Image 1: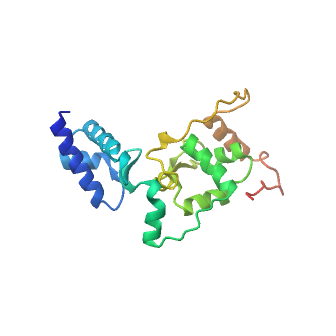
Image 2: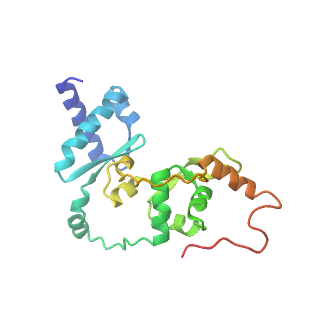
Image 3: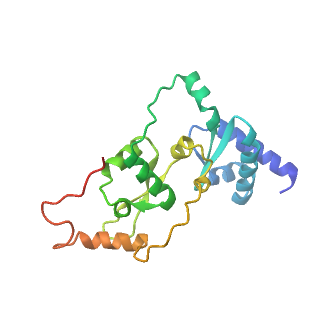
Length: 207
């Protein structure tokens, strides 16, 4: 796009984000401005770069965008607003959150297969904090919910988009490791009569 065109588009995007109460879909920007979604994305990326040295940030996840305060300014913003929220997250919940963040979207069954313990309590805690949410359903038997991170997750950890997560260290490949689809199929088979955990046994709960 020409410099003048992208500047006008940036102006429109900033103004809409400033007045929006919720994240704004890329398609909504395109409809309002009459521009292609590709042009919208280009302008949003330009706005995000402009904000790097300022007190605001542009957060993006999937096809939605929102404007937030810079994470390094959070102590001042919280003091001004009188926020006194306990930000501590249990070790079990952090483990579950890390799995979701790096492997999303995935089902509870797959999370439990990776962690080796029941994750109901951890998931409930993360959902209550608004850090994860249901983003769809798996195509396997029972169509379990698939979980992914939220805008609140990005805010909590000072990220602009999920792709800004630090890379995982290179680990030796486990020859016995199974894909998400294989894990979900194994979970479905384990629920068939005569299989599974067996009568009277329960998975260990999160500590």
